[in-house]
Length: 234
Image (cartoon, rainbow, N blue to C red; front, side, top):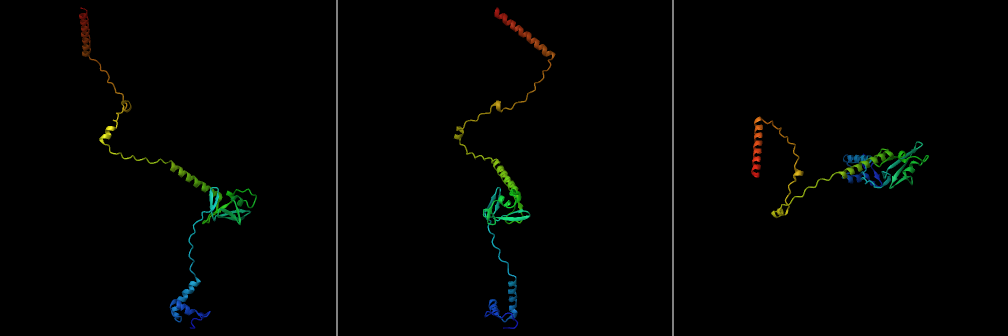
């Protein structure tokens, strides 16, 4: 064994350098060639590579339904009394405080007088979140989301359906035309639009000649009627 490797000697009867040389394919006594591999092995030992990240687990559908608010499995609940906090967690479909399954109201009133409103006293931290939210805030947000959902559904149901496209008419033959009744013309009373009142021309003043002609025509007519009566009586 070379004196340049005082730390590498016999270990449990096996020559460490010989084994390492077999692993690298180099001769164990070739210190210059073996040194980089030895240093790399030591660095990997001192700074191991991070473990491969586990595949994301599908979120569980279990949880606790608290009125309008659904608490998925893993939700943390927090309350306090006399400046001391205590916690519970949603496991499966139950809220667990230690080994006991309790309701939100029971959890809020584990300590104290027993008349506290759980919505105002319990804080929630949902899985994957780092923020604590008051249960009453979560309930208000959930109610608003439900109202928007219902309004959108109502608007969707109230939309008029698109007008149906008319079916293409089939070509008609001369026989079909004879079978079809003749179209009746629209009634004048119903279809004719009312005409605007026509302006009547103003009567013109009669001249002297026209008045004389009218008088002479009246005399001639009287003579003819008189002659006709005499002829009838004679």
